[in-house]
Image (cartoon, rainbow, N blue to C red; front, side, top):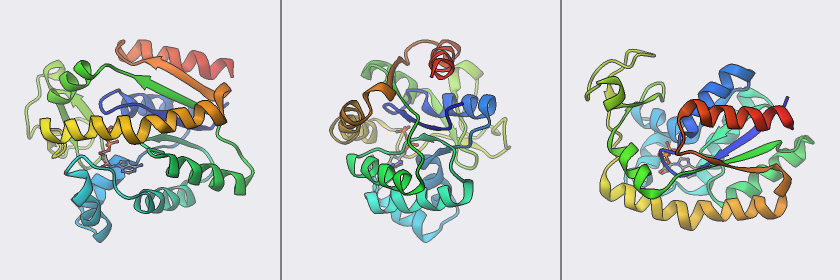
Length: 217
Ligand code: ADP
C-alpha cells in the first residue's frame, strides 16, 4: 500500500473530502494545512494570528510558516501521510523532497484534482465549514444554514472568512501562479507518480478513480 500521498488541486476541488475517505479506507493519517492554520487561528495562538494576516486575504502564508506547521505534524504522526494543501509552492515541494530524502522514504503518489473555475465558484458559494474539525458541507445538499451544528463535532458551521468573492479571486490567481508550478515540478521530477483526476465528477466517482490508481501502484 502506498503511504505517502499528496493531493493537489484548486480550492473546492474536493481534496479534503477525498483525503478523509482515503484516510478512513487505508488508515493513512490525513492533514490539511489550511485546516491546521484555521484551527490555530480559532484558538488564537500566535501562529494562528500570524497566519490570518495572509489567509484572510486569500494569500499563501510564507513557506517558512507552512513548513513549520507540517514539520511538527510529521514529527507527531510518523512517516505515512495524505497531504491536502501541502506543498503549495515549488519551495515547499523541494523542502518535502529533502525531508523525505533524509528519512530514506520517497513520495509514493501525487493526485491532481482538476476543476473548472465556474464550478469552483459555485461550490465555494455553497460551502459551510467547521473551523474546529475541518469538515466542509454543501449547504444546499444538506439543507444547512450558517450556525447549524457540525454533524461531526457539534461546533457551529460557518462561511470561511476567505470564502468570499474577493478572496476567492485572489486564491484562484495564487493557485495558478504559485501552485500550478508544483504540478510542473512533479511532472519533471516524478512523472510516473503524478495522476490527473476529473474532480467535476461526483465524490464517489472521484474516490473510485483514486482507489483504482492506488490499487494498481
Ligand atoms: P482551499 O482548499 O479552499 O484552497 P485550504 O483550507 O487548503 O483552502 O487553505 C486555506 C488557506 O490557508 C490558503 O488560502 C492559504 O492562505 C493557507 N494555506 C494552506 N496551506 C498552505 C500552504 N501549504 N502554504 C501556504 N499557505 C497555505
